[in-house]
Length: 171
Image 1 (cartoon, rainbow, N blue to C red):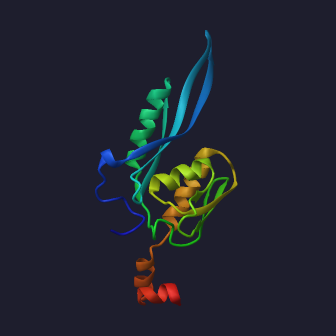
Image 2 (cartoon, helix red, strand yellow):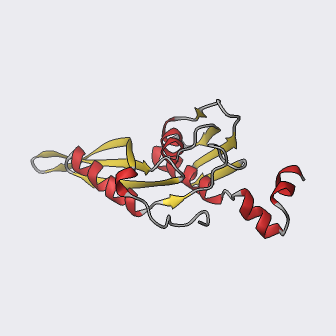
């Protein structure tokens, strides 16, 4: 399966969802304030497939359900190498900047809130990550997805360069 594309077939029962942020907004009307909620949700199968979605509704549970449905429509496949990312990458979305680096086995996911949700949902177990710039969860999640989309798998790099896989790692 090629990387950075829609996954061919993902079993919806395998997907695990994580609510990253819930925001309450108030609209002032004649009778007082009317509250509504927005929820940003990350779903993933823990095996290289991840997606995020935004849901808005008058109730928290409805907003989360809509966010999960939206996230399932936006799934992407990311390359992984021994439960970490294949190489260092920066991602950017609006004011959010993220830096993602591969880590040795046993390191764990060293990342802040929204980034941690995306990386753990994708199934990455060892990674060093830093969020620079905006701390807005929407921007951080989108910047993290941007960084993961720009990742290239080692066999893909070897094929594009026309060299053997060992040469990609050993020079």
